[in-house]
Image 1: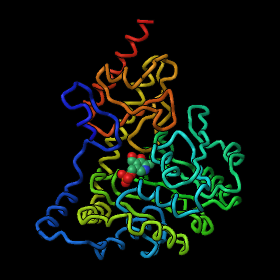
Image 2 (image 1 turned 90 degrees about the vertical axis):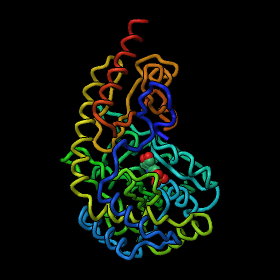
Image 3 (image 1 turned 180 degrees about the horizontal axis):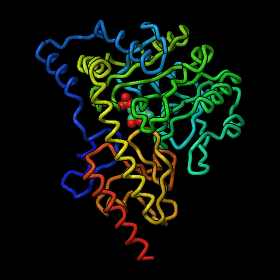
Image 4 (image 1 turned 90 degrees about the horizontal axis):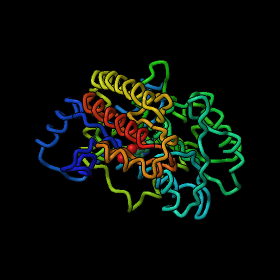
Length: 368
Ligand SMILES: Cc1ncc(COP(=O)(O)O)c(C=O)c1O
């Protein structure tokens, strides 16, 4: 999808959030073995997969999860939509903080819920929640908060204090939290740690639906395998009930890849983070050196949320496409005046794209 969009054109595709890298060899081997088996019937999660996930959550986050809390899904977006349908009633409100990954904005409406958007605040070159504004936007029918952490597109890893404050507000107003943590394996700042929302306190876990997947970290989005972790039984039952008859089984390849990802790929993962960290530094240096463009520090993800508001461009994405770089339009994230750049690609390609962007802005400045 990423490369087909500009097929036959000299436009470097740095838009949709997958990486140009091959998946780890251990995953490719596991998939090849599974294919050699030759029978592709209905598949339940492989016996050891739940154990592998439980062990990973314990090792990475000190989070003790029971295998029965896991609900397998063919994608995180499915999980966001199921969460909206599972919590509250028709016409109840679902809140989120913007800009945000577009399905956060569409899932409530698709699920007969009202969307309430509260803007994130950029202060001293750092994005964060505006807790006062957020709390005052809550109404008695607000039932669900869709949280993205690490955050796509602003790249923040929310701190313990930020998450605590958010969870306390949700607690006070009896709001369920759906915590999309798909980017949790992509922390680029070594002094930061990912804190799963549900690990803040047992009472927070009771109201939290966590969504995770190996798809971003190990570059497997085309295999469609994700999972929810829901410790509270009634909430889990409602979630499973909302899936019934609509959400398909996870496919055999997705399960196989997930097991290999979480079991056999830690060295590959460490190497990936080193490479992405350098790419991130390269983007930050280049973008902040281009007049009129700026970028707040990217703490996690391979996505850079670039502020182009100082350029008076009618259609920034079109201008960068004309210069040979395909970016994603901030408008889709409810972030007009921004573009999102995906740096999950070979460094030489990234450098070429950044040079093209610099040249485009230089031409723009001269034309003014
Ligand atoms: C925050 C977030 N959630 C979900 C997804 C997509 O998840 P899936 O492909 O599993 O539906 C993405 C992909 O970019 C994402 O950034």
